Amino acid sequence: MLRLLKLIAQILCLAGIDNRNCVAEDPRVTDDELVLAVRTRVAGLGLPDPAPASAVAAVEQVVGHPMPELLKRMYLEVANGGFGPWQVVSLAETGDWFSDCADITMAYHQFSDPNGVLPPEVVPLMDRGCAMWTLIDFRTADGQMWDWDPNLCCIRHAPAPIGQSLAEWLTDWLRGEAHEGPYPHRARANASCRNP
Image (cartoon, one colour):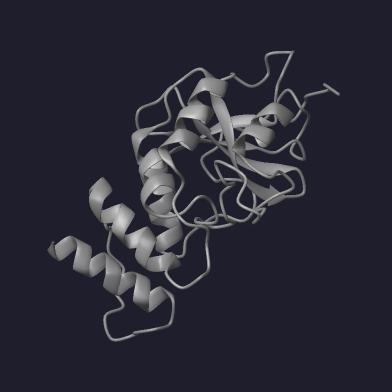
């Protein structure tokens, strides 16, 4: 409980609401604490209501793999899209588009890859603009995060793991440390790449 109070104090500090308790510490939190911290961070932003369980089941059926548990909880307990550094895509159409895609299924179909560059269980989660996306690996229980950035080299080298779980990625966002450009821990493309 003490860790949760410290994390909420840090969120209030980063949001400029309460500067009395600004501390730079590593908030290693449980999923319950992280769900509450994200819910607190987005309160009052007018995000869609939480998604229905049927929307989770529909996405899992399309992907052919269960959604990482923490991501499922964020959608079911926080909001049907809009949370995160650049607003994650909704699970199901809400009328609020957080990218050029109405929902995660539309984004997933747009990322369908007949050449096998992107594993089919790696799902687009957040549109960062300029053809860059943050993706999540449904094959991993902790939701390992991936980067999609064709601007670095080519389509073949566009996807790469970033070395963070969903919990770590969300924690960076809550601490005001979300990355705007290429992720610092992503696997780098070979500079001599000549792929189209």
